[in-house]
Length: 269
Image 1 (cartoon, rainbow, N blue to C red):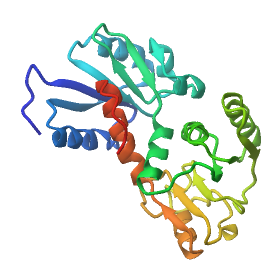
Image 2: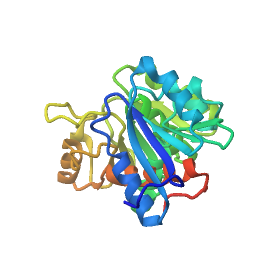
Image 3: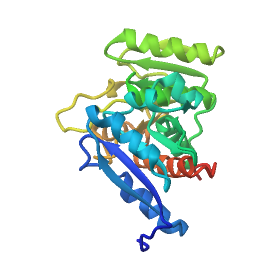
């Protein structure tokens, strides 16, 4: 890392807990590759301290932005001065840009990072029928990004079906021409199968869908980074499916976050 001086631009990530975050390492590597005089530091902020912490970040004139993760993604919305359309629709923010006047602009890049990661690996979701397991925060962002990418049909399957229906109602309101349906645990008949849940992080987790219904014509994608090959991906590999790991989503999201916070407007790739 370059020497930190009074001219170094600051970035932060706020979370509770903070010890597990990998974003600072990844963004600092990117800054080093770019030759940028910038550094990101992790900041441990509890929910009750969020408002005060954000007020402090807002006042730091050499701070250009910060990343927001669990448990602050929804709470931070009310503390931003402006939201992107994606952040407004989803009701969550995971990256904030600070303008020179201290105004805070929030965006959510989970979905954009996922779609950019697919495209980087040569998988274009446009025109495809997609099965998405999950209707939580990450799945919300991914669902909107898939709709924006031009998928032909989107099926959302969630244990609580009302959450899947609510998500699809909001998506169809924003993308009226999109064909959609609430799904079961059966992913058959779709071109792309996406796990948008946390199932697979632990060895004892159930599969997010019925893997016995997969076939070789399908692509199966994960958002989980560790383990790299989740039980779902292992089952999909056995079925002859093309598999897509979670790592490209993180790599693209890191690039998109850095670009958003710095105001460069660059895209992943």
